[in-house]
Image (cartoon, rainbow, N blue to C red):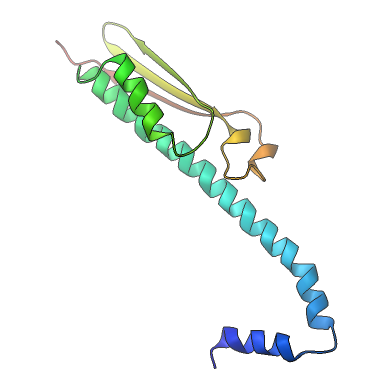
Length: 133
């Protein structure tokens, strides 16, 4: 019998109540840790996507391959899966392109169980030299 099945079998056969009591004590803690991990994993995935899309938009803008509106649409499409509130700021001067994506940490989690306790914003700010025309 597999080790995990032996544990379940022992749990099923145990009649004294101690296993049930321990299960009742530990399961909320284990579940809380799992939800916290999933929440932070989702928040970090949102942050990673923000950085990737900021780089992609800045590069496209610097090479004159996309307009500012198409860069905003590209970022919106790439972050549409996350349900995160975000703000995009695109600035240009003669030599540089600046793309900044910002989202509150509080709302970047999957269920906002752990991230609701965080203050501040995730910020992805990319600066790229503009290619000559």
